[in-house]
Image 1 (cartoon, rainbow, N blue to C red):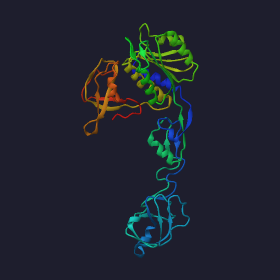
Image 2: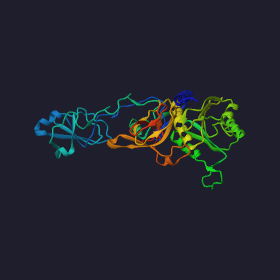
Image 3: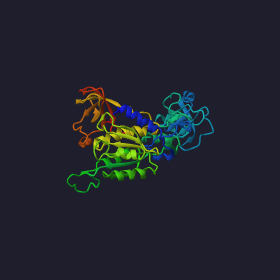
Image 4: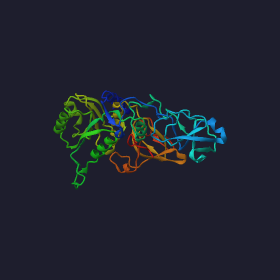
Length: 409
């Protein structure tokens, strides 16, 4: 039996040893991928000085002469080339939003603040220097940091990338996984009526959904009966494939039909740990096959499987991608909880904004590892650490979103 922090350290070290290759992905398809390169701005944005308004480009000193009346000598529209001819004394240029300003322009006066009579323009205001001009490089300077290796790309990154003309980014290839749910009692076909002694296989579809949310490609997903020989054949088959990790749920405890550890040992796997001082999921097993593929043996109770995916598999993925360790969010508890000292407990919870906007968290009823009804309302996991026997109302609790990229409210 080891602590969660010890187990996590082993998982992180193993994950760092399986850094995936990079691949080029077009910008519109980048959301959810992890950047594999330090990316810098290839150009200035704005690329040239341009107008922020429809109006008139002027030299400010000219507006004090002739009663603030200037001659309109030209017009520049968005998409036109940067004018070669600078503004001269007594002149102004009509200009549209986004159009390049003529050399010598010191301000743009909005069209609604002028009176136009043929090519005579009377200005009603004295603008400040630089008014309504977007300067070259004001948004991005060439060489400025845009993305860092290990950074997850979200929808908000797409607009700056596109504005910079970046059509492709090198990202890490998605980790490849296999997910197996073990048990003779499991029924995979959810449309099939249950027979006595049977239950629906909830771990398999949940595992697939969770792995997809984590950015993992799951090449094989299947139910496996309590048959050690079949399990060993599957391990032999998977050892010939390019798989980053194998995940199974069930058959990792100490019962007669808990065959995973023995099967792994027969396959020559190195058992890195087996049993962690946590709840749910004490029998968690982590191993490495001879070909380097990592193996997560998660307990079969549904909530233990979910917690194992979130608190063992997800940290491993982050380590593989060169990402830093995930930081928890803090909130005040609105409900109490008691537990045995020395045990770390992952609790089904729901966080929301309380009075004044501060985050509060409800530790939900139904914490038993077989109970999945709280999943309908939960949006996070709350952590009751080893040295805490009781969480009282208003105690500060660490939270992790249900999925790594999900919000809490």
